Structures are given as C-alpha cells and as structure tokens.
Length: 210
Image (tube, rainbow, N blue to C red; front, side, top):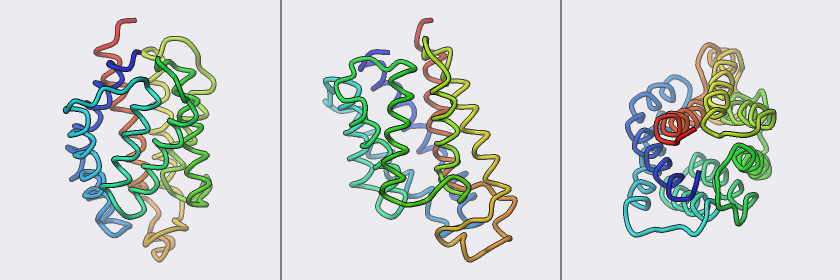
C-alpha cells in the first residue's frame, strides 16, 4: 500500500471514527467520565481536515506522525495523549517507510505499544486500550505478505482483546473506583483501538487489489 492509498485509508478511518462517537460515548458512560467518544470525535475530525486539504506526506511514516500530532493537539485529556503517542511512536519506528505492508504495520503497532507503555505505565490486563493493541501486535507479528489478506485477522485479534476487557476489573481512571462493577463492560479505549483497525481493514479489503 503506497502513501496515497494509506492516506485515503486513514481518511476513511477518520470519518468512521467520527461517526462512532455515540457508541463510544455510551461505553464510556458505563464505566468512565462519558467523554471518550467526544474526545475521539474531536481528534478524528481534525484528522479528517488534515487529510482533505493539501497535505501530501512524503512517506507512510510522516503520514502517521502528522496524524498523531494532530490528535495530540486537538483531543486533550488522557485519550489524546495515549492515541497521539500511539501514532507518533509507531511512526518513528517505521521512519522512511514508503509502503505500508504487513511487516511495516506490525512494526508500527509494536512501536506504538512501546510508546504507550513508556507514557502511561498501564500493562496488559489493566482494562485499557493496551489490551486491544497487544492482541493486534501479537497477531501482526505472526503474519507476513499481503496486507489486504492479513488486516482482517489483525482487526479480529484486536476485537478479541476488547472482549477480554469485559472480564477485567479496571485499575486506572474513573473506572478504577467502580471495582467489580466495571465487570461486563468493555473498555472504551480498547473499543476505539479495535475500531481503528476494523476500519483500516474495511478500506483495504474493498480498495486495495490483491
């Protein structure tokens, strides 16, 4: 996938993340402050604007880096820091990449995960977006070759990570105060992580030739 196709894919992701605000808000109202959906909507609206103007990134790394910077600057709060760090750290780990293939995506996700670890201190099992991201990293590192073929499996693994958060007791944020009452609810950040990969997969499978 070349940089122009990747840019168009991320524009598709941004549009659908904006449209997902009501669902994300509902999930966050159950165990959080209720503002996660609004924050993601704000960030991805800014990404939409970025990707529909004259921005022409030189390579995939610079595309993802600019997306991360845009999210960090516009979202605010913990989600802005975490998802902005995901994109920025992931981008730095694939510096100079002109194509987005399975191996490049795996490196991007792993680099993003390390950046989130370094910034936030959460770990797998803490009922955060990390649970969905770790699942995606582990799946992507076992795959190679055509990205179009592999993205559905990576997205599916991330979704399984979301499902796993329903059985976890939150250890961070407002949800931490709920204790066992957070059981049965997915983590909203994990849902967002999974949706980003789901929308990437949808676009790739419909638009990118095998």
